[in-house]
Length: 295
Image (cartoon, rainbow, N blue to C red):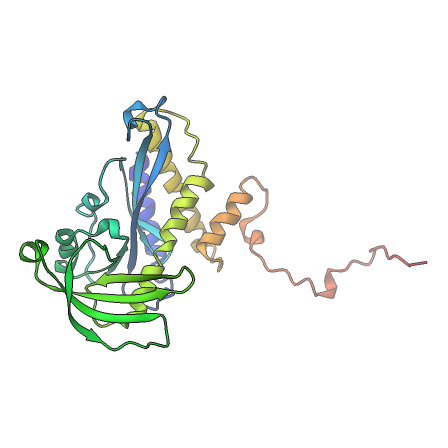
């Protein structure tokens, strides 16, 4: 019942946020795909045994970055592989799916391509390839290379060969080199790198679900009780997102959620929490304000 309610709220929220401006200025939807472990007590939840000494369930999400709003959510056993969940993920033609290298599976990435969508993922160092072509990049930026690569070895005859675009840049802040793979060929290389950087929004979503709603403490220990609490958390997030849009509050959703979390029991209208008060206005001073005359 709670999962069904969450999916109804997802549909409603996505309709409201359909025209929400994106920081990347793209016409197509961008989805960040990831999962997180929800840790449980092995003594209280032996059914969720994960490693023999730990218990957990896994929360999967595809986050529409126009909100950000969860577009597809699932709760699975902790041992359920992330790449397997890609088989259940509905693919929208023309959309972008941004994911970490844990989802790098060429058969499943090919499914995204054949559906008319685009993927952006990090390079995995154990996959062999060779460079088929290179394009010039602006070396005054962090970009290092924009290449066309072709898989070789065992992967090529089974799942290819087809070209993959490889964009490389230097992360000056953390002193490391990052490489991204995509099947999108027309966008600038800098946009491909920025698409992957926007994936951090799903990390904020998971953090809020787990910490903002106190998911670390469960009110029941059965599989159904844990799932009910998780779906209730998703419903709460979506209800807050819908409220923000209906009240036409300009504050971004992440800040809006944080402010409401702090004022959950305050008897203050929501609009007043985000109202901008001009403290320089002299009309705020009252006539009976006491004055202090220094000696």
